[in-house]
Length: 218
Image (cartoon, rainbow, N blue to C red; front, side):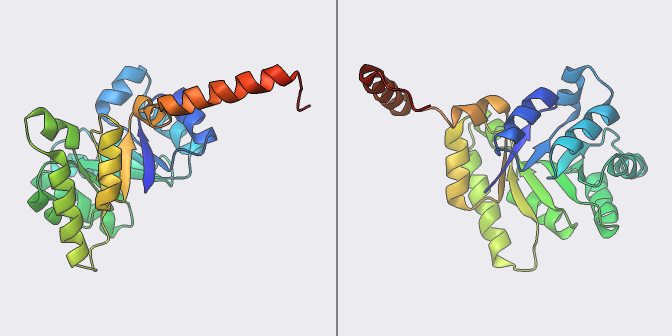
């Protein structure tokens, strides 16, 4: 399973990339706004940190606007994946860009039917939002399972399931068990994956025993 980090914080991305924990990056207008920087500069810097796909989202809502913005974003770096919303104009843009060789991440997916449409439009990634479904008392994992199953039924579908709106490690583990290709995680959730009380207590015990020997490895 590939791990993408969901942030526009360049320092966070660099730190995680140095640990080998980042296969790509997803951003959106809200995350870019938090950076307080120009979008093109942020995307360019992120693309220089990781060789994996970096999702940069359009802000236009009409086809012509999305297409123009998508081509501009793709021009920033070769590993930009253009992110478009799951609307009719978004899918039309997805088809146009994908036919030109641009990878497209179709976002804001909340149903298996929408995911099937995105695949037909040539999306490289489909981003179902599990956390937002959980927020309204729907089971986000059921959606992931449905999409994975449908895609597997048709070998011609190359779209990867990119689990988004991940709130905690359980979302990640469940997604991996269901066979999702990618999960995009906030930095804090990635770091939560490292934590377990038995790891901490075990390390403390080892270090205490070693200290009693008075030895040094070096």
